Length: 315
Image 1 (cartoon, one colour):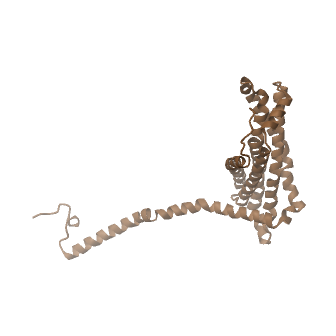
Image 2 (cartoon, helix red, strand yellow):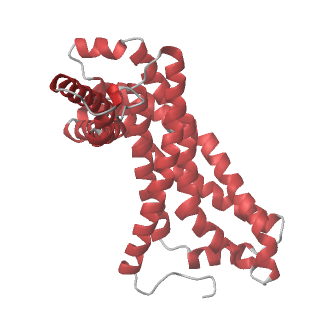
């Protein structure tokens, strides 16, 4: 007689009752296993979808916010043309930023001249450094440097100011009184960033050019006439135009990102600090990405408009 040493529960059922109980046990075990395994398999796309929604929802909210700001800027110019609304952000973004932007631009030009002289002098082209340095300054270094200074000095301040209004419920109070905070608070600051960043870029460019001139002519005895001659030979009017065009986009990005960080601030005083830091970091990354995209596009456009190619210090 063959006995199952492990007991009847593990062997074949001996009667119909045992067979039914055995089948029920198997079905219950499989059901419990399915409850643990089905969500991991069948609901995996759901988890991915939830993650994508969490990641993309802020992008959609920022896009709606940006469209609202640009829409009010175009549709209601009287909002930001009001002197009492536009003058304070113009002063904060532009006038108060001139010293730091101009000083930084000047020292960047001086450093470029100081570091590059030895290499160019070794190949007998020290007198042509003006064209190379100034072309780089007005196209790339000046606009990016001015935008970074604005993002650091102004972007964090805008985020902190609006963030404080958010955590103290001032923005909610404005909405309760049917006053649109985007129209009355954000639009003037956005316009100030768009208008004043190109002006600050011109200061940065001018001081960078004069800083390089001071080092090359005063310290290394490069002829002043040669410096300006090769600057005029290499620097095309398209170069400063491209730099100023970039600065308009830089200013728009700084204004939108900084105000958005302030509007979405939460968590009290620590949240305001995080919003200010995030405003600068995000603005800086946006400046770098925008500069890369616009540099590629404007270079291609230059070759379309001017098929003769670039101007060279070699003549």
